[in-house]
Image 1: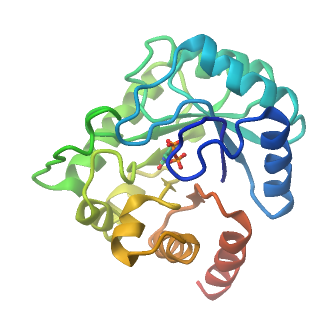
Image 2: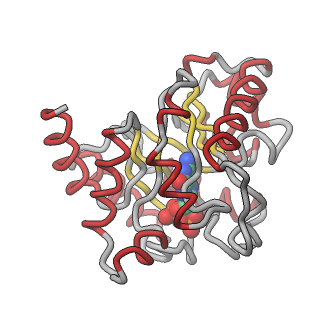
Image 3: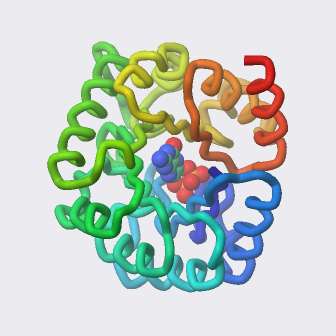
Length: 252
Ligand code: HH2
């Protein structure tokens, strides 16, 4: 899954794809490089961010979707109205970092639109989530949250076979929480749904390496997650991940 943030402030690629033509060209290039799907987002969820209003999010995302016909697209949104417009414009999946806790109408839009859905764990909200994240057992708590949200989504009419689960690397988690979630990913894969991991260019990698160039660190983390059962990797640098995963997959 390639990442296109149509935002001025995303923590790793903020501003790079803020123009719709540039974003659409980048989405096409990601598919040429081997991405199976491209995740388009108009609201930054980086630690400390405030969120954007509906009109501004639509203004960012819709022009990109209008320019990427034929590209398999996921839309990173928690807003039902953004999801509705996105599905009308051909998006196949809604990636909701609130796991259906943000907008009571989102589940119905996804169900009616026949879309795929990603449910992600987050402790707290982006504005404050990294201030002091605490868990008794991060893996058990994230797994039980995802199991509950999966049930909520299915009860709201989204077919189970269209749902994937994501432990939410960096969303209300310390470095050690993030590492433990990947180390013990079997607790989440055992819920029976495909698991998505988004660790590309995240600050955990910067803290581990002390480097600002996070491509190699991102690839290493993606391969480690793949080897523990993750099947969707959300990444900014598609080509190195596709190559690394081709090799890791051939060996597996
Ligand atoms: N991470 C980010 C955004 N959306 N969605 C899922 N399912 N999983 C993730 O780990 C995830 C996500 C944050 O990363 P990024 O897109 O690079 O930055 P920003 O939120 O600042 O746009």
